[in-house]
Image (cartoon, rainbow, N blue to C red):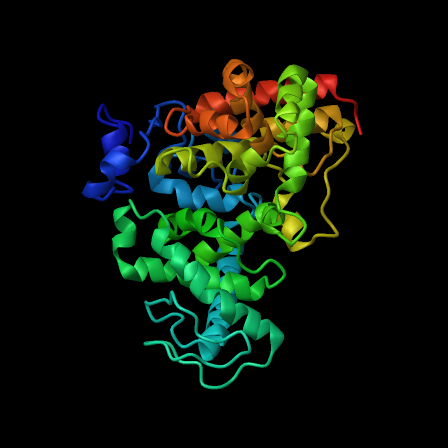
Length: 416
């Protein structure tokens, strides 16, 4: 698993890059390390005879060295709350089958409205007019005028994320196959139908793509994405007066104001006190700042650090799951929480916008502190300085610095 040649070339064999794109993508820094990275062998050893997972052992490994690419998809399903680590293999197989059947039902429902869904193809041009009249598109049939508001709103956006699918991770050989692009489009189409409150917002394609690549079964990829969106969906809630990540930007502002008031004042003087320049980093979790492999590594370390053992039940039974009081948690129970979440429990900090991603952005700003104070005379310069981090960030160090900032902030900030 971790041979002498377990370097970048071996890792990228899991996610081949198109030859013509090699020069334009950020350099990959992540390398699996024996004794630190969660390997397939260690992963299997973490299960009991009945299939229950020792999540504390798994979290410890991931936080130290990430996950080997051969098992990423399987581990992500637990990190994102698709499955309860205390469930048996039989329980999970039953739940997986139920979810696959539900996804198949939704997919059939959507295909009955838009014939191209599930056919290995997708659309990039409108299929209805604004008033619901069908537009003839090759390979896609809408048989009659659409009067239902939900159906019309859904059909009007289908081609928009078709355009995004074409641009998604286009450096990866995986998406040279149109069938794989269609798989991504199908998942996004069905998600936007099921969650019509959020629908589709550009950037969801960047979150969904790794799930489609890591999990061969389309329904499993959908449910992994659905769980990821449970924690991210408010980032994508946009209106004419607000953007989805505004709450997290507000938290970022408060963090910098607390840990580095000089930098915060300088940004305020540049009319950057709302921190809109950090919008993209928070929206798509640094997908554009890292290589594909490094972004996956960053995500899984973040999710491990934020892990809450109640996550599965909070999704399955929203009214019945809650964290116990810190004083009632023994050391064994505490080890089932990620480092970041554990610190929040210890300090009683409960801000729902207090995501690790916020502290990651704050740590990036801190690394560029001197340069911003010295060179930035306007927001364009701030954006330019932050743009230089692409391909130059070390995901592991960024997470370590984020935890240090969290600790510093919680010591200075008052409890709610």
